[in-house]
Amino acid sequence: MKNIVENNAKVSEATAALQVLGYNRKEIQKALEKIDKAELSTEELIRKGLNLLGR
Image (tube, rainbow, N blue to C red; front, side, top):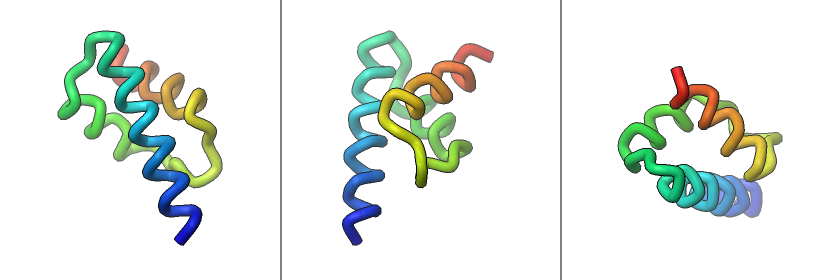
């Protein structure tokens, strides 16, 4: 259960950061769905999200 809560917090933080950069919530969620979030830090999620959104 703790892992799910940690992942949700990381995803929420990454989503907020990407929104600040000008991406909309829908496109962010679509990009983050493609990433295996289990072992990634918030920063890594943001980086991978940016890579997917930048294409």
